[in-house]
Image (cartoon, rainbow, N blue to C red; front, side, top):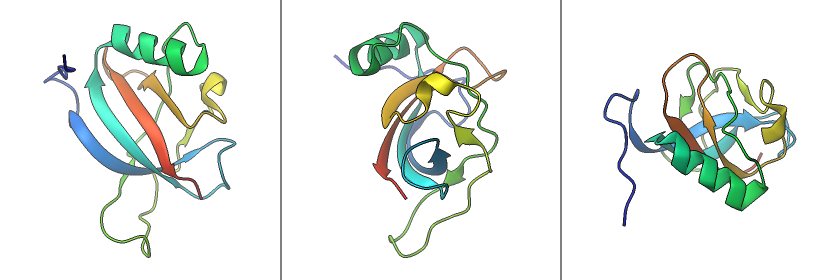
Length: 115
């Protein structure tokens, strides 16, 4: 099987992003793999399997920096910190969240390079 992404999601699909994840690395933005537009039931299953969470936390992210290029040049982040408004995600390298106030779809993330 495969995951069908919500076509109404803002930029649905797979991307590399730059955003600080609270209690992962330093306060510099980390490099993340992000899949946007995931069904919330799938997000809930991902969180339960990976982290024992029973819900999909709401986390505001603003405009997340897009990462591309080499590892010598990092983009700036929006200043939003993953785990700041959803403390259950603090220190979590991989999980799923719902962007507060945007829509009913999830964002899967995995920290590829903590900074």
